[in-house]
Length: 437
Ligand code: ATP
Ligand code: MG
Image (cartoon, rainbow, N blue to C red; front, side, top):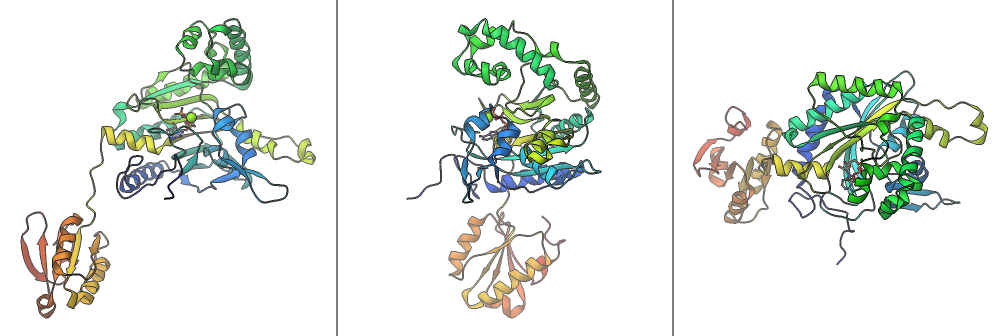
């Protein structure tokens, strides 16, 4: 038997080992879209594959994603172009903003939802195809952008009834020159204590030393206690920006923790980074992550320059965003505030095989009159078999049609909860005051 690929899950109408049922996905998506509409953000739908170069340049060569988590292949062009399934949404969104010149005279505020792909070891809350809901706000370098994004996420948790189990962590990564100075100091300190480092951190010492800060290794963490602190390397502008964000959050009543070791795994961030974390999902603690990335637009613009363009100065534009992992969010909702199961339908129509055509017609007319009702039927088998299906369907009402009902232009209505049955005019259900949801 041919099975699905490891780490790639079916989202079905029923719960499976690796996914909540599709009805929960739909309800969550509607909630998220509702909040984004309220903040005046607009949706974009971007390709699932991009040139590998976009991610390598954008996310950074020495990041976990680019080093080991990309699904890449080459296309059939000559010479073949390396392309990859997108591991995240920001690089593609930035590419689209540049390609379509969206920043000309505008500050686009965009969101997207869809699958992302990373070659990781699958476990609960970590898959090879997973889904992100992402938001990107372009064009402003001021801290109100991060405050708005964080307020938006906080609203989402409240609407979902899970705000009490999520903690906001924030940090400032400063600007690249500040990080560079810090990097030198950190490497200097760690070089002197090399023997105490775990093997992963030892490798990162030359490739991506800041990532050592979020190492899970206890000995490395102990060593970091006395290491130089990034906060001490921030310039006045970075400090003021971070202080302003904290003032906005205080004003909004949004609680936060400053986590000086929060560095995030992607190279493009500067100044603010933030995560919403929970202790309810084991190692998969981060439900939402984001930050500011003022240099990415300039970086990707210059990555696409031909030698002839090189003389023109490249201008960047500020931006900030976040992404929520939907599988983790659904797991958390299930733990903390499970969604009530929706009935599969409101009305089930059972029609005797002799008058089945009239039954079909009735169901159609009811759907036409009542767009709020879900109306189901079974095939034209015996009344007994159809009644069994009606019982199993979870419908609130079963409408029964046999020759007698057709002759008298009536319907029999069975209330499924009580079993009470009554006769009515055939348009009785067409009026919402007779059967409200
Ligand atoms: P982690 O530290 O858990 O690997 P990350 O830092 O790689 O997360 P981001 O790249 O910031 O995560 O992606 C944003 C969010 O997307 C994460 O917080 C998480 O909720 C979700 N996410 C990331 N990778 C996966 C995955 N393989 N499966 C499911 N969700 C994921
Ligand atoms: Mg990861």
